[in-house]
Amino acid sequence: MIARAFLLALSLVVCSACGDEASRPVAAPPAPWQTSAKAVLANSADGTYAASWEPEGTALPDAEPFNMRFAVRRADGRAISAAARMSVDAEMPHHGHGMNLVPTVTRLGAWNGDELLVASGMLLHMPGRWVLSLDIEEDGVLERTQWFIDVE
Image: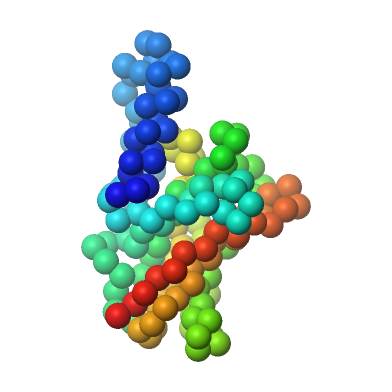
């Protein structure tokens, strides 16, 4: 809900400066992207990026591999470099371990100011608190965005 409100507010600000441009239709996002109220928004550690994530499908599956979608944008409005490297991981700090799988991150391209990604092969294999991280390395600088996920 917060991510949708953020994207709506941002699009209103951008479109208010567009004049006749605001009446043009916006191209559809690349498949399989669909925004929803489930997206969870956070800023990166130094505030360079704003990112949101959501699972593909209706909810996080119970100990089953799944795909996770991400939308990332730079806070300064510049496009993320095509050479930027992005990786996704999750760990359980209270248990001292991470996931049993290494996800593959695929960049789907830019849409509406966001860089869209899909992390395939996510597996939160047990209940408890997970820390999800998205690392972005751009122009020699690595910055992390993190979220807490409580799996029941």
